[in-house]
Length: 244
Ligand SMILES: Nc1ncnc2c1ncn2[C@@H]1O[C@H](COP(=O)(O)OP(=O)(O)OP(=O)(O)O)[C@@H](O)[C@H]1O
Ligand SMILES: [Mg+2]
Image 1 (cartoon, rainbow, N blue to C red):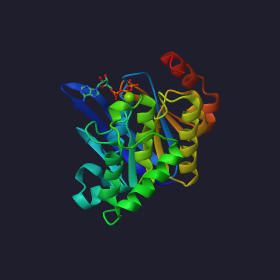
Image 2 (cartoon, rainbow, N blue to C red):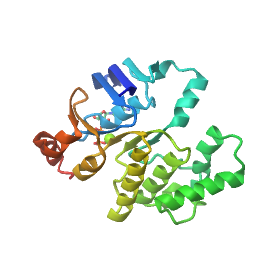
Image 3 (cartoon, protein in one colour):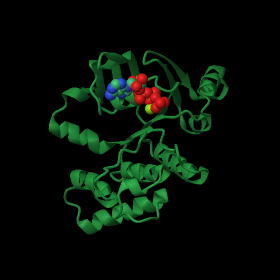
């Protein structure tokens, strides 16, 4: 299987802190990879580096063999259209209504869409994620869980083939969380590539083809789905987090 994404000797440091150091990794096209590891070990940073949202201070992140940091505007736009990111803190625009936030990716990537078509698409996605309240309000009026629903919905709008999900079911009740897990399963069945961060062993077992466990931005272990089912190390690691 071909790697759609590759990290080559990727390091990231900021304010004299080395967060990620010399990571080499490949993400296979059509597969689902879970990133796990203790709090603060660099999972979110590694996910953002893989998605090209931050550029490595050493090494390179490659998408289909192209250095993401060296892409021109058109290539970057194409990559953005194909990929979607759900941030750990949802990252909705604080000074925009939910509708404005949700319209933005459609305006950028489908400039010929009419307002009615955009609204229809947004409604369709909101129904799938199970968000039923108004879209005329701002994110500060929402619970953390509702923000997660909107953030997940936003990621689905442009039908991406590459999904980055950072603890996307945190703060949700079991029913809503299961709904979003099912939606990710559907993405998996469409052979989309998914990279997600989770501490939750059940979610990892349900979705992941591979698991990568990080420790202090440096060392990592790669496990296959067969190993995930029986690997004591992963279970112990997640239990140590006391989040499971
Ligand atoms: N922009 C930044 N400036 C300074 N330090 C940062 C920055 N981003 C991340 N860090 C630090 O890098 C480390 C890794 O952060 P990161 O958010 O990637 O961890 P994580 O594994 O996702 O943690 P969690 O499980 O709590 O979400 C942390 O110690 C964090 O404080
Ligand atoms: Mg994180």
